[in-house]
Length: 121
Image (cartoon, rainbow, N blue to C red; front, side, top):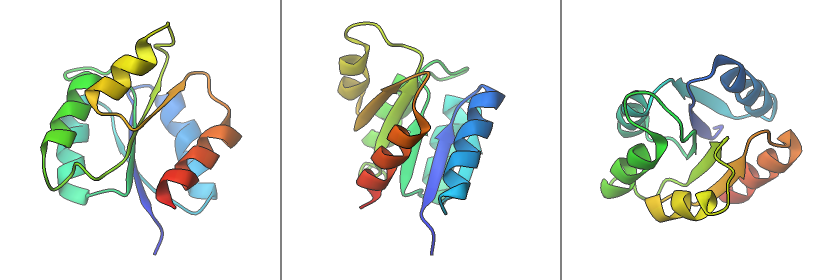
């Protein structure tokens, strides 16, 4: 059974790039376009890993991460921030919110795929 990855990303091109990369690597990809839907989908489908944009409509990625990690049934799911927030300290802010990893956009597909595989064992 393939691992399920939830991509929470509001930009269509970024979702398409991640979807193509991950499905070609054999993962099942689910998508949410805002933080609120992402939190609801995480609770519904219990993905194996979440790729979380930070700049999201309705609920930003920091708050969505905090909500997911506050749920005892979901807190074990690794969350990797994939964001254009790349200033000094932004990675620490993402980790403080509960993210388990951090990538700045633009990202190297090879590097992000290696990190996804590392988190999924």
